[in-house]
Amino acid sequence: MTSKTSDTVQPDRSQHDHVHAQPGQAQPGDRLEVSIWRGKRDGGFKQYAVELRENQTVLDIVTEVQRQHEPSLAYRFACRVGVCGSCAMTVNGAPRWTCRTHVNQVIAGNQLTIEPLRHLPVIKDLVCDLAPFFEKWQKAGGTFKPTKSRLDKPEPIDPQSPARKTANAAIECINCAVCYSACDVVGWNNDYVGPAALNRLWTLANDKRHADREQVTDLAFQEGGCASCHSHGNCTRHCPVELSPSQSIAALKKSAIFGLPDVE
Amino acid sequence: MINGRQLYLAQRLSAVLLVPLVLIHLALIIIAVRNGLSAAEILGRTRGSLLWGVFYTLFVLAVAVHVPLGVRNVMTEWTRLQPRVVDAFCLLFCLLLLIAGMRAVFAVV
Image 1: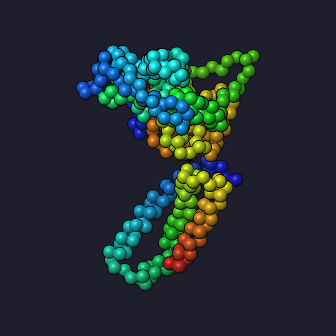
Image 2: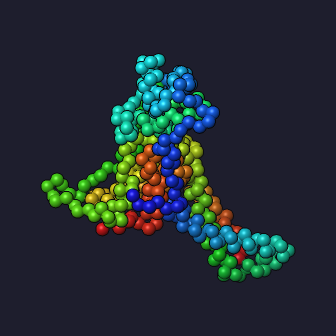
Image 3: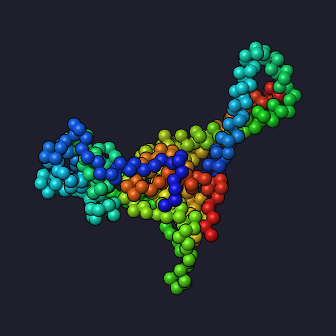
C-alpha cells in the first residue's frame, strides 16, 4: 500500500486489536443485556440475556440468541473469518463486521445493541437489502471494461509502477457496505453513490487496462458523485480492511483540476 | 450544458479568487472606517479609478459564480425540490447578484 498523507483520516485500528475488558465492564460469566432489532425499519428492539464468555464475537452472540432464544431471528453471515463481509451490522451505533468484532471491544457496561446496517432497506431483523448499494456502484461506473479480449496477450502490468501501487491501495474492497452505512452524506442525499463506489472508480482511474478510463472524471462528477462528499472521513474510520475511501474521493476531486494520473 | 465537473471547477476556482479579494475588501472597510472617511471622501477616491473598477468587477463575478453554486449544493442536499427547479433558482440568484453587484460597481467607480 502507498503511504497515506497526513491530511486524510486514518482507520480506527482499535477495531481490529484484541481489547481486554475494562474495569467496571462485564466479566466472563456475567449476563449481557443484548438489544437486537426485530422486524423491518418500523420494527423495534427486543432484549435478550446472553452469557459473556472469554472469547466471543458479536456474531457468536447473534448466533446464540437465534439458537437458544429466538429461532425466527434473521441475520446473515457466511465465512465467519472476515473475508466475505456478509455479517456487517450496526453494533452499539457503529457499523462493523460482527465476525471480527470481539464483544469486549464494544460493550458499554453490560449493554450490547445490534441493529441492521444504516441507509439500506431492512428485509427482516438484521438482514438488509444491498441492492441500492450495488445499483449505485453500477451508476458510479464501477464496471471494468477490458481493452483486450481473452485471445490477446495479457497486458504487462508492473506491480511497482506508481499507478498500480495507487490502485492496489484501494483494490481490496469486498463491498460489505460498512462505509456506505457509516457515511452521513448517504443518509441525507439519496443520489450520493457512496464511498465504496467512488473508491472503486479511483482504482479504475489507475488501471491502464480499463477501456473507459477517460470517462472516469466525468463519471466521478455526475450528480451524486464525488462532489457530494463532505470529507467527514467516517468511511475510512470504519472500513474493516483499513482502506481509505476518503483518500480515493479526494484524488477524484483533484482530477477535476489536474486530470487523471499517468498510468504508463 | 455545463457538467458536474465544470461546476465543481467553477466553484473551487472562484473560491481561490475570492480569498485575496475578500481579505483586501475587509482590510479596505476597516481602514476606511478607522480613518473616519466620509462617503464623499470614499467616492472621491474610487470614482474614475480603473484599479478599483477592475477589483470590484472581479469580486462581483467571483461572488456571482461561487455563491449560487454553494446554494445549489445546500438546496440539493436539504430540500426535495427537482434539480431543474434548483438550477433555475440558482441561475436567477446568479443574475440577481450580477446585476446588483455591477450596479454597485458602476455607482462607486
